[in-house]
Image (tube, rainbow, N blue to C red; front, side, top):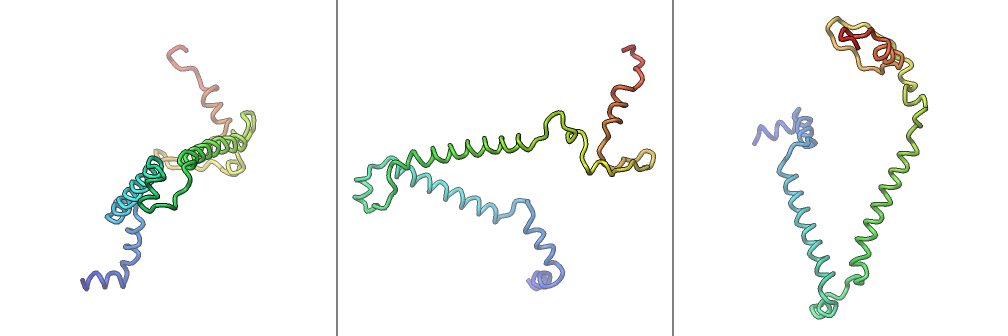
Length: 150
């Protein structure tokens, strides 16, 4: 116990914080997931009680503050319509922000202009960079015909 306290008080704080932010499964995430599952099951049960039990029965047992039965169907439909509108608007915004097919932006951009070819060791992996359209055309269309006779 003393070692753990000393480790937390000294240089292991960064290591412990790194583990807390890790995406690996930890018991706390399992507990949070289980509580979320139970909460969603309970909310669905309450929704079904509200949807299927007549209002007279609910008033008889003392549950009087419920929304109107209209919202049993209206809320999910509004949610789904909102989701469809969101997807359509997102698709439209993405299509509006996409460059046309004949735009030069599809070939190159301002960041590719300043890149210069750099020498690299033989057998090594070259640095990541944009390949110019002239190099691609030379490789695909100006290469010598293959020996297979095509």
